[in-house]
Image 1 (cartoon, rainbow, N blue to C red):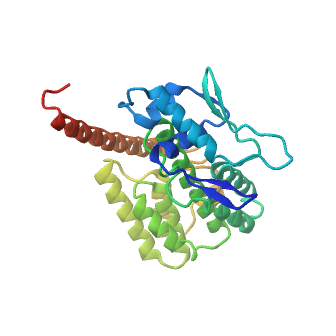
Image 2 (image 1 turned 90 degrees about the vertical axis):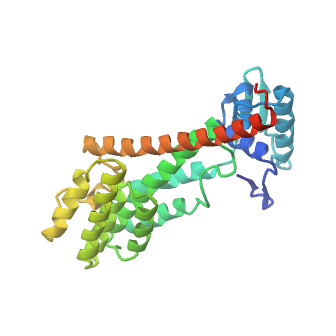
Image 3 (image 1 turned 135 degrees about the horizontal axis):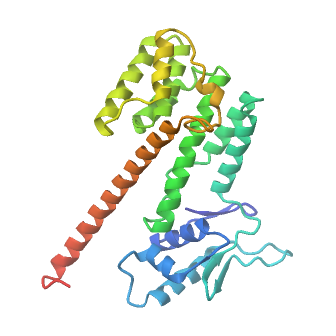
Length: 304
């Protein structure tokens, strides 16, 4: 989480975790008034300081000093406003990496059907903006956590579009390594498995493509108690019979995981995977909170 003033080539990184959490929450809700109580929860969770309002005001004042100064001779842009409704961050002419990412992915989707080579370049440019997890260092508050999850899902869907376009442009060899890494990190995301199978098959690596299906089938059965979906199963049948299914993944470039107006079951399966990820996140947060309560209780033997 950092501020980059391109006029002077200056990068400012808020020093403290609370400053980064405040900046992250205000960026997520840019242009909207964020109530003070929401920001208090974002910064301190269920354990705010005694005078939370004053502590928040102090952090806001420090953040104001970090924001870029107005340009010489230009109109004064007020970045951070205070009102009875809360605090509002106004971006003005500034652009966030997330906005640039969404714009480039949109352009890549539009180019996919007519200029796949150019679409690949644009999509990779957008994905190159990712230098780590979304809103890294902004804490685990509800505003930033929810936005980070949405941004990560957008990144994965952009990767799906990218590899569909690469398959359309017959650039299979250059993506097999990337897809192998992705299926290792996201073993329950069937689209990556299907795209890897397609790329391997087209590179003449039929046995490896079928082995990819078997690994996906075993993992889905073990972790979710379900079998492969129709898209993955059709891909396997196409490879076994050395043909391409009618609804080839490359023909669905930019259409999303299940295709527009298509595989409802695939959508439900993806939702199941996402919900499982949310459950794991909640379990981890619950464990961390339980450990924190245990530590505090140890210092107060008489309890609350």
